[in-house]
Length: 135
Image (cartoon, rainbow, N blue to C red; front, side, top):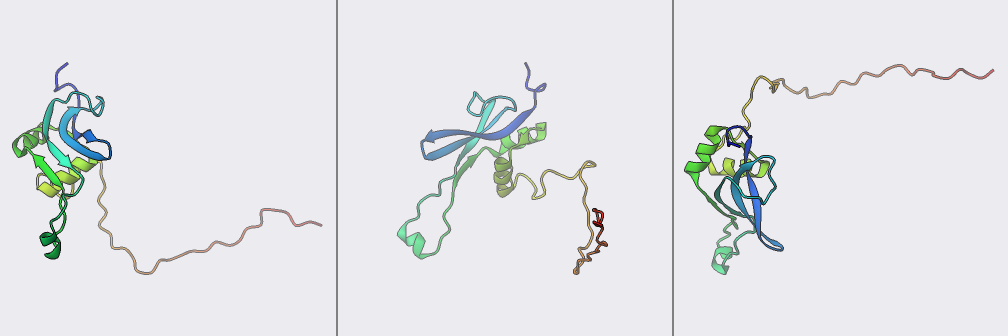
């Protein structure tokens, strides 16, 4: 079974300890299990923020999450047509590999550029009697 014949996706595969997740950013077939053997490992993502030193806290430094990513291979797989999961798309947007409007608009998506009216117009219908009045 070749890679070209099956759809592939860039997604996260979990590893690490209980309550301390660390994810591999992997290229895998869409129908394969989450932690099965991937086609390629592109990097790692640690969603737990790195603890700040007291000096950094005093300077109001924002805590950050550790991400390692191979940009060249990621660009290759995106160029080949690999899909991305929602979280990986968010990470790739932050890294600058994907545009902010992803997926791109195509003929199947509609873009409506109408201005929203400030005052909603509500039309009321006449009340209808569904029951016959009793004699």
